Amino acid sequence: MNTAVTLRTPLCRELGIDYPVFSAGIGTAAVPELVAAVSGAGGFGVLGASPLDPIRIKAAIADIRRRTERPFGANVIIDDRDLSAEDREELRQQVAAAAEAHVAVIVLFWGDPAPYIKPAHERGVRVFIQVGSVEEAEAAAAAGVDAVIAQGVEAGGHVRGRTSIWDLLPLTVKAVSPLPVLASGGIGDGAGLARALTLGAQAVSFGTRFVASDEALAHPAYKRRVVESTAADTVYNELYDVWWPNAPHRTLRNKTLLEWEAAGRPAAGARPGEGMSIGTRRMGDGQVRGWPRYAIGVATPDFDGDIEYAPLWAGESCSVVNDIKPAAQILRDLIRQAEAALEASSG
Image (cartoon, rainbow, N blue to C red; front, side):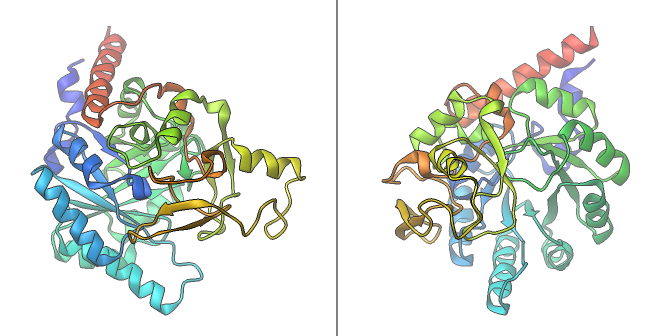
């Protein structure tokens, strides 16, 4: 098998990137430094734009452009359930800000992409959406997205998927062909990248792997917990529902989870320490504020509380994420491992 051709997928050629490796828009951890490092090394970095207002989105995109001339994207969560008219407009403006700044791709998650496709396409910006089922992928394809990201239940952070990526991926590829499909969830090394490509993916979106990068804006203790953990240490749950309810997620076991379990797994409103602050952290607006227990968010380097009460987002791929290193080195290692895996499978 010619690994160079295999790794340079049609999507790579379309986007002008060297390798089928995306860094996921992992909230406030996906900062310009990380995005530029991944894109500069030949992959495709994605900015975590959801925590930012439109002005900050444009400023972050300008920052990335000062660091690299390579293509990159921006991620926006579009869950508009229970939003006020004002909040819906803010969401629209976030997507518009990324489009107006002409990122290569806007990556949407958790909602209907239809309202955002035409405005992006009018500015020459592609729209991808991460989905959790074949049905959601088919609906997105019908709406006109440029690619879908199939997310397996193994994923860390908020999880749209309900089935394994290894089951969902080939079904999604078949259902929306010839639309490009990317894979995410439970993939943290080059062997997983090779397996996904073999099943028809045109790239893989890595989240947990890039949490454990030098450039990710995350607390060092959080990064250490990721590399010290295995899939058995992750839990699919809905515990962290403050600021984003009814959105399942995968995190590492910690004091918050253990104390909740010891209390008999009470419902929201009766959980241990509910309403209390676990410390302060820098929010997406740049302000340092109290962080309520059971709230979403990423533990930033300046978080001053006990890391074991913070949500430690991590996918099952943490089993193969065993070190913290520069993002460019992570990408090089992924490609080297994938080449070896593909060569071995062809022999």
